[in-house]
Length: 295
Image (cartoon, rainbow, N blue to C red; front, side, top):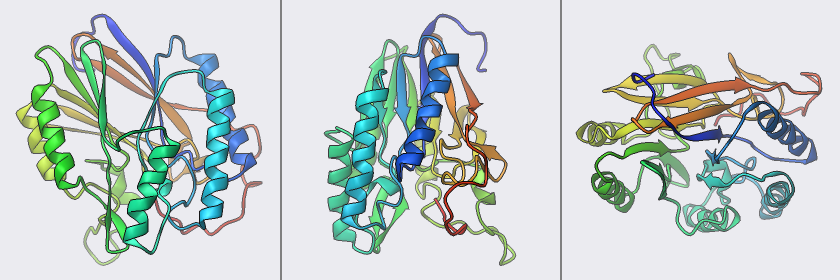
C-alpha cells in the first residue's frame, strides 16, 4: 500500500468497540488478546478506538461503575503493551442530559487515564493524533469536533515537522462506505444517515487533510463494520469491532469480530490488516437482548 515500503517504524494493534458488560465479555476480550499475543510479533502499541464499556450513555451510574471496574481489572492483569485510548460514545455516562454527558466525559477520561480527550503521540517520524468525536447535542450526541478541538487539530497538523507523517484515530468515522448499510438508511427512497454515525464536519476535515499531504491514515470504529475508503490519497479505515454484534454473535452484518494490525514505515507507507479471532464458545449461546441496538 502507498508504494514501496522502507524500514518498519512501528507495529500497532487497533482494537475498537469492546463493549464490556459482564464477566463473560471479559473472557471474550481475553481471547482476543490471547490471539494477537500468540500470532502477532513485536507489537509496540495498542490503539483503543473507544466504546470500552457497554451502554454507559444510557445506564445507571452504578452499572457504569461496575463495567469500568471490569476494564480496570482487565488492564491490570492482562494488558502488558502500552495503550493510547480514544473516547467512545458508550464510554460516556449520562444519557438524557447534556449536562451529565459533559460530566460523563470527565469520568470516562479519568477511567482511561487521560488528561485530555484529544492529544497526540509521536513515534519516530509518525505522529498519532487522537480525536474526540463525541459532541453532546440536544440530550444526545453527534459526530463532530468542537470548535477549539478543530483549531487545535489544524495547528497540530500544520506544526508537524517536515518528513513526518500523520495517523488520525477517531471513534466515529470521518469517512465510511459501510455506514450506509447499518440500518434501513434508504427506506424513505434516499440515503439518510443519523448525525451520530458519521462526522458531520467531514467536509472540513478532508479539506484540511488535503492541504497537508502528511496526513496518510485515519482509523475509526463505531459502526462495527469493516471498510476502507480512499479519498484524496488519504486512507480511511473502519476496523470492525472486538465484540461483533455486542457479544451476541461473532459477526455484525458481514464483518467478523476482530482487530487490525497496523504497520507504519519510515517513508510514510503503511499496512492495515483486519484479523478475525475465533470465539471459543458457540454462537447463539450468548446474551439475549434486543437486536435493534445501534452504535
